[in-house]
Structures are given as C-alpha cells and as structure tokens.
Length: 211
View 1 (cartoon, rainbow, N blue to C red):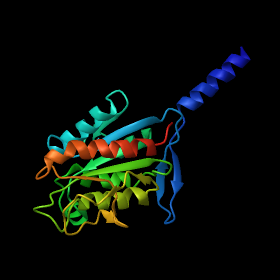
View 2: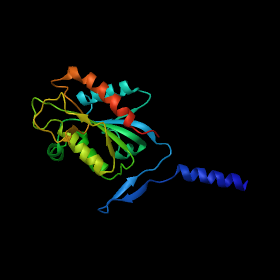
View 3: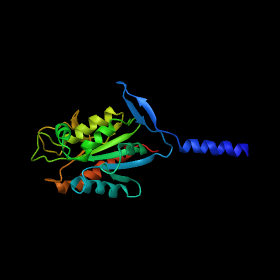
View 4: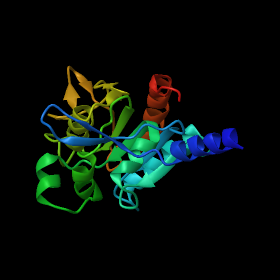
C-alpha cells in the first residue's frame, strides 16, 4: 500500500509541475516551461481573415493538418508558444515603428507577453507578408523586427532565404544578404506564393528538431 501511495504521489507531482522562472542578463524573469509533452510544431499568425490568415492555412495544409496546430495570437496567451519545440510565426509587413505606435495588429499586443517568456531551445521560422510596390524601402520589415525579438528571447532562427527573385529597395529583414525568413507579396505577386512556400518548406522542415 505504501509503495502505491508513493507512486501516486510522484505522478501527481509530475502533473502539477509548475512553470520555472529563469533570469536573463538584465535580471528580468522569464517563463521557461519544461514539459515532457512538448508538441512538435505550431503555427501562430495575425491578423485573422486576410492574406496572413490565408497563408497560414496554406502552410498548415501543405505540412499536413494532423502534424501541426494553428493559432491566431488574438486567441491565445504568449505562453502557448512554450507548448511547441518548433514554431512558424506569420506576420504582416508592419515594422517596429508602426507596431509600437499603432495597435491595429494583434501582434502589437502579443509582443509584451512574449518578452516575458524564454524561447531557449526552441526553433522558430518566420513568414512575412509585404508589398514591394507600395513599400519598396520597408519590404517585410515586420519580419525583421520579429527575428530580432525571438532571437533576443533565445530562439534558434531557421528558414532563412536568398534575396534572389525579389525586387525591393531596402528591408530590415535582410541580414548578411539573406532574408531572415520567407517573404511573400500577396498584393502584387500572388502567383509566386505557392511555389515559394513549397520551396521554403522543403528547406525548413528538416531544420526543425524532433521532440
């Protein structure tokens, strides 16, 4: 009877294991969830109902609906990211100044929550939608800001792509002559989206780590 009691107690302790807090170099405490039930891949996107949402659904369908979960950031807390070993974040062309000045995109409200978690040992791939005709000097800047944020939280960035085939003047999403993720232009180059996604997935899927 005593052995059964101790075993049951251990199982309860594992089930109720709390989130752990770790401190970064500036002394800020970060949520650092460790779980044996971590899931393989999650897609997180915003805003809903437009091109970003459509691209997120394309990614899910191409990967396989049974292999990946998908969430709009408006519907989940940032701690949801910690459920996944790998994640794809899909964002619009908004850049740092627009996100911080205007709250039109739910990512703007999500970022303060993200800054309270640690993405150490997670693998993150980015997809950014831009407009190379209207905003040639700020093409997919939002993806550049996202890359800065997730790497600052300890994530490993995967899925960088060549700038070949893209026409633009400047972008904060280009680092060392590579885009930090996959740029798409659904406004003026929608006919290229499918092939770009297929090529990118062939490259990025092997970069994700198993759980």
